[in-house]
Image (cartoon, rainbow, N blue to C red):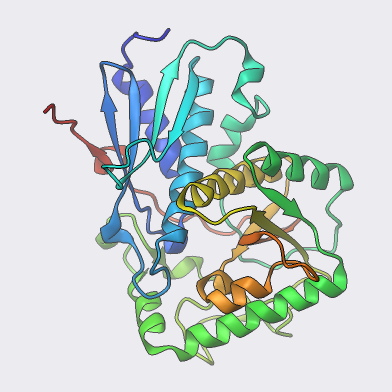
Length: 332
């Protein structure tokens, strides 16, 4: 199928799948170009949607784009192509984060993921609601770890004492974010009461969710208020299940791989009937991010904390239409 044209309907569906990926503050910091000659989708950064204070190095932007690349891979495979992905393919063009070329597949196993994940793209979204005490099965944990490993990352499930420590580090990061004037102002700028006026980006007020009444789980308060009256307090799960996603190195390509691993994990979790929310706060402070690495050797680089469990879905965040994230490719 390589060399065949990509019809407009299929292209639009693939891009809809890509933008369904999670992104930091729902900024959706990506743009796409199609090279029809090689049937290659270029995935580019949208730096104007970056967060200058919370993400000065652009690590979270790369992780977000990596998650979108994984969704694109799944969608491309669903429509009969094999995606060949190159990360950071042009040193002279740092804004080009990935190129996904559509090739004729040799066999389904070449895709590197279970074949039913396409449907999970449309079901997956973060849940900031309390989860039940129902355990996450060992089967699910093994498959989630395998999904991360496939993408070149490591997913571990810390024991209860280590989970408590990681949540304490996250609570410290949340406290710092609220106390930092620049970061708290930046957070509030991405909140919108009118989804239409925001152009489909940012976070509508309705997705904020409750806070943990007993303060065991430090859910992010996007309003950055110490006593947010608008956020109801509820009792969250007593023994939360937290997974730590790490990479061996910490370069731009590793951030993109971490994003692919994150979305692979989230889609597999959705297939198992699990809900997830992301605890990103300690990733935003270099010293706290280092503290997340497992003791005593502190190897690896933390990329995300993922809270998993069984519970309600929670509301869906808006997404931009494919036409809003597509650029025309200019020949030189």
